[in-house]
Image (cartoon, rainbow, N blue to C red; front, side, top):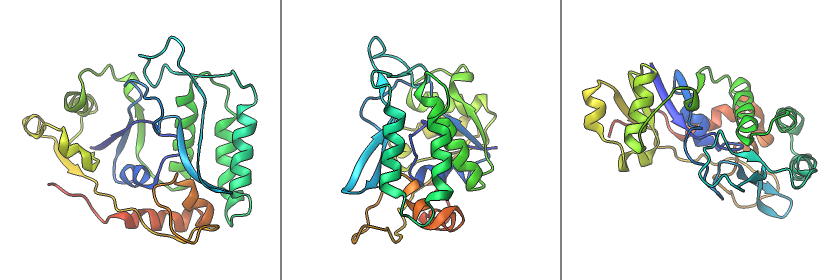
Length: 237
């Protein structure tokens, strides 16, 4: 059982999807604290005037210590969904694969929920389906996990009966490998190098955008091939 773990990013980037494609089980880390102005409720796209942020408004009133799963959508702006979708349309409607990618975004943004993470998870699930990423998905909020940083990751691995864990490159900075070795859980690192592809409306390549930028340009089939070029395998050191 090979697992990987990641917070439910909004419109996730290619490295997120690349790592998931190498795992048997993907644990969505929604039990940790929500972090303002990060990638949890927003991401970058290539808009009509260059790079811009797009995201889901969240309510932080009384929820400064809330987990990702507990954080609510802000409905101060009742028309935020319409504005969000209009931004996507204005940014990508003239791209070759807009009609292939846009419906999954529209369906996910339109689901009835009070929690922004539900929308993120819906997008992730639809992307996995389109990219034929076969790993199962489980939420950390359903696992009754404990601990922080390395201890939290190890507890998730134990509760999911993992034989191996795929970490990002920054895992080298905080994972206590001796604890994983004691539990006979192998740790691998996914050192992802962002691939370069032709971007409509941009003369100079812009990396680390939401993955939908690639898929709008080349579609899901070719997009997966490009996405997996970021690295061939996994590192043990």
